[in-house]
Amino acid sequence: MMGLCILSAVLVLAPLVLIFSYTLNQGLGSINIDFFIHMPKPVGEDGGGMANAIVGTLIMVGIGAAIGLPIGILAGIYLAEFGNNPFATSVRFLTDVLSGIPSIVVGVVTYVLIVLPMKHFSAMAGGVSLAILMIPTVTRTTEEMIRLVPHSLREASLALGISNWKTTLRIILPTATAGITTGILLAVARAAGETAPLLFTALGNRFWSTSLNEPMASLTVFIYDYARAPFDDWNRQAWAAAFVLISLVFVVNLLFRYFTRTRYESR
Amino acid sequence: MDIQQIPKQQRTDLVEKMAVKNLNAFFGKTQALINVNLSIPTQKVLAIIGPSGCGKSTFLRSLNRMHEVAGGTMTGTILLDGEDVYKSDPVVLRRRVGMVFQKANPFPTMSIFDNVAAGLRLNGVRDKHILEQVVEASLTKAALWDEVKDSLNKSGMSLSGGQQQRLCIARTLAIDPEVVLMDEPASALDPISTAKIEELIYELKKRYTIAIVTHNMQQAARVSDYTAFFYVGQLIEVDETKTMFTAPRQKKTEEYITGRFG
Image 1 (cartoon, rainbow over the protein chains, first blue to last red):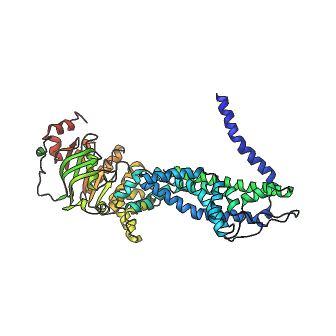
Image 2: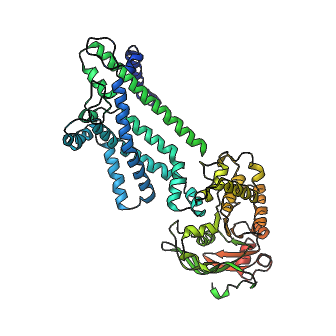
Image 3: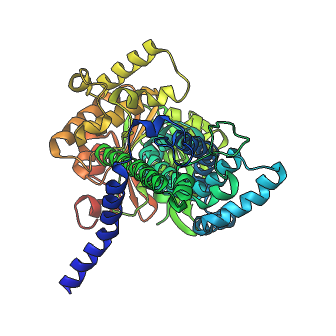
């Protein structure tokens, strides 16, 4: 029995270790400073980078966050503060459903809703699809973290003659901030790693573009294109991009652990 | 228990800070208080004693409308300086009637200074000088100033249990209430901290009207001027503490005080 458990634990670690070591191995060789500041070069030419893809991911995740975070946090506050009625129960249920919808479906729907009327692919559409993917995580985490704040703090604040709304904004929310931040970081990390929705909305771009109304490159689509290509050189670049993306997620996870540690100390 | 048997206050020359008339308190269908009539004399300490579940905390919380927060309802009248407290904004009421809870609950994300200043700041006071003066005065009144004056920027949670409770008392005093309600303020503390809090109450009553719920009868005897005994939601007896503990009128009171139950 014990052996089975240990074996399972090893099996859990195995994919992570494999992914990391493979990407490191294949990608590290191709990483140099060029990668981060240069644009992709035509096939056959040496060098070139993915500067536009990196910036593209940052911009679209940024748009997604700008739309998704306020909606998610405010919805989370609503559910935590006023969430004992049938409407709130259905919101909670539908949020859980939304978090389970495959990201490609979100992409296709965003295509129909935004790309078709606009008549072209755009970074804006990409950002919106990412926002839709972020909202459920942020909403549920915000609600959970606010509910975790002890009721005694609300009582202490009300007993000082502070109004209910001010209590929520100035006492409860700041106390829940560390926890809410972890929800935000998780949502951002997920959004940064999405490919399918971006294929239908932002499409991808070989050239430098920061315009929100035009197709935009992203790390994930870059990996998709370059890994499928028949060129060795491009494949190596795809590995490098994969390595950069994984490092990004890893760093976000480290930040996540840092914030949760701080939260325990202050209790 | 016949309500007519509940005696009136002995001293009629005392000014009544708060008056409770025919108070019935409910949580849903459960009745927690049955027809309570009691007055809380100005600048004296009223101790509220009784066995667990007798309604003493519910009674205390109805005085600053905190039991509403837990979903309770009531009928009857509660007056503060002659005005019905249920006819005005509870937020305003709570600035006049402050509360200290059983378990110290300083705001964890705030420093000691910010904790004490919270009541003022969040009610719109911005002047740094005023805040500094009030914080120092409140911490002094709560007998905590000397211990924390050099570490006002430290987190409120870095203090010991007894200190945290005194911090909460300072926080309540900072908003300059007229009445301070204390719900078993020392029950979670060690004897030395408890003694400090009791000394504090003795000093505070010179300026504030105090009502303290306590399950510790010796504490009630030490600290209060008047004592009210509650049992199963009813006020059984209220009298000067001296009389209450030496010659109580009701049999139930005597049984409780001598430790035959509760």
